[in-house]
Structure formats: structure tokens, C-alpha cells
Image: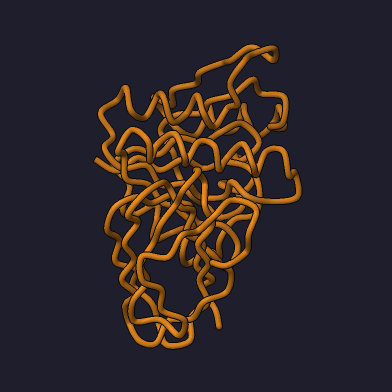
Length: 213
């Protein structure tokens, strides 16, 4: 069961967002992301947040338009972001894969917080993907097959001590290569064809793939 979470930050293009919506079994919108969902014309079943970012008239419009819309009102003072709460709600509803639309943007603190959420999902063995403007991202451990196009740029960044990776079918292949924290070794590799094979032998690695050359 695929859960889709609309969140703040920079969104992918309309075609990508619609594709994500069509594939979702459950769509959850976080507070101010309702503005983008409205602009894109994308439906959702649940609205989560402290409602400090959504316009009151838009909230009322959603309540009048979507019969059965679930609204989960959170306190402004809380220990989790709206997005982390949305993830918890999606998992409670039985979702086994989490997709994010948005999540990275101008607020560096929120962007880094989003990466922490991806890290937590990876630690729990829950598949996930994040689509933002012109890129997608996920945390990986173990084997991963990245679907690509020739010359597509991708990067791998360590999110744990003692990371070790193998990359094949890329311009800069690596074999059992340590990927230490504090270094930029994994930045800006390129795919040779339609697939890149990645093996994370140890640790957790952030994968970022640009969706244009």
C-alpha cells in the first residue's frame, strides 16, 4: 500500500505530481502544502497539521468540496513536524511504501529534518522516495537498482559512520569504497545507461538523482 504525503518545500513538475497521485492508495496533505495541492488540482483524503500555514478560506473550501475529508488538527507546540506526524499516520493506516511530494526547499532546517525522516524510514526497512524540484531522493542500505538515463547525474552521501559502497554502470565506478563523513567523494557521478547498480555494504547512504542532465 503506497502512501503519498504532500509536504512543504519545492514540488516536482505537474506531470510528476499527477503520476504520484495516481499511484497512491492513500494521500495525506500537510498543512500549507494544501496550497500547492490546490494549484496542481490534486486530491487527498487526510489533512494533517497545526493549520498555521493554510489559508482559512482554502481550508473551508476543502471541507465543503471533499466529503469525508479527514482533518487531524495538531497543536502548534509539538515535538514532531507535520510531515513526521503524517508518516506515522500513513504507517498506522497500513502503508508499506511512503512517497513524498515536496520536502526540500528554502528552509534548510526543515529540509534537514526531512532527511532525518528518510533516515528513520530506512532504519525501519520501509521503502520510500522523495520527489522535489528536478530531483528525487531516498536513503538506502543494501542493494539498490537506480533507473536512469545516459549522463544522468546522481550523488551518494554518507549518513552513518563507516559507510562502504560499490557503484557499477556509472562514469565513476567504485568497488568496496569507504564513504566517510565529512568528505564529498560521492558527489556528481553520472549514469552510463538506463541503470546504475548500487551496493551499500555498510551504513546508510543518501541517494539524490537529478531528473535532468
